[in-house]
Length: 182
Image (cartoon, rainbow, N blue to C red; front, side, top):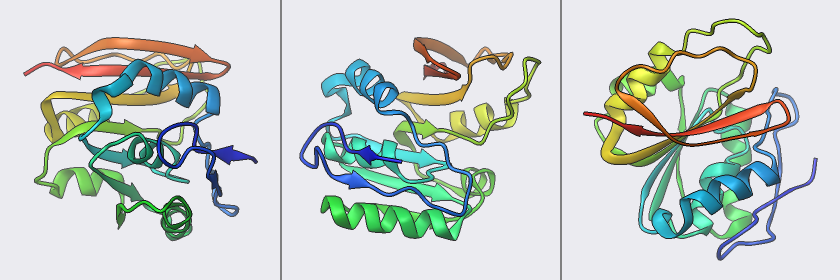
């Protein structure tokens, strides 16, 4: 799979995808739409990339001026891949090999921008995402944004403490940019 950084100081840098794990990196079209929506707002922001996979979302954010990015993934292969991708792009990040839910429970830092692209089941029925949404809410700055990627046919219930700021569907993938309510 050919994957490249599409904007910022590392534009055009090729990114590798882990071979042995099931990773679904954000499509270039979807990343372009997300970052077009975020615009200059991303500059200077503290970013968290959950279920980071290849790191494409967090690395794109760093390339476009985010001040820092913490990448969390349970797969050592993914963390190694992100490390190599960061080196190729001449960028730095904080890499954490840990279950995302455990990280969110232990973390004390607030992030201004959170990405989550969890593995998803392709079903057209209700999906329980309450744990993820609650934990991200506890880890996000009051003025922050949560970019959540999921299967477009999932039926999701959004808790009262989130509001949809932006949404986009491309193929089987849907993205919501959510604002927290406190």
